[in-house]
Length: 97
Image (tube, rainbow, N blue to C red; front, side, top):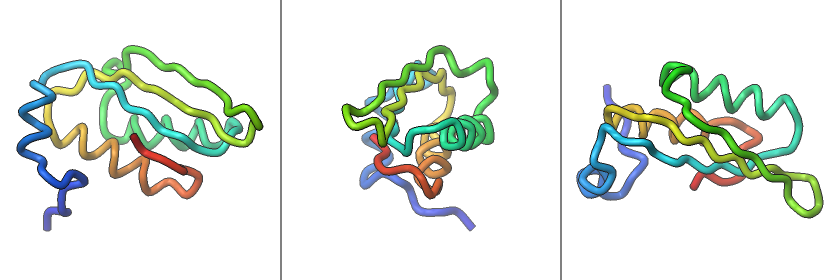
């Protein structure tokens, strides 16, 4: 059984992404190494480590949250959706952008 898309209009999103392509994913979650490990594990459960090209992080002014950006080379729409789905299920994820 297929899960519903994480996008309202997945066909339009797929046309805009022009896969295969480098996609920037942004996530906001709790600060600390535990969340980063969970985040990385969720992403690596969908794509190979070699597909992760760059990673950036920035702490919030109060230090409670960290914004993460991962630039990932995706070849198929199911990789894009899988990353959003997996990271969105993590309990410490606050925002998926």
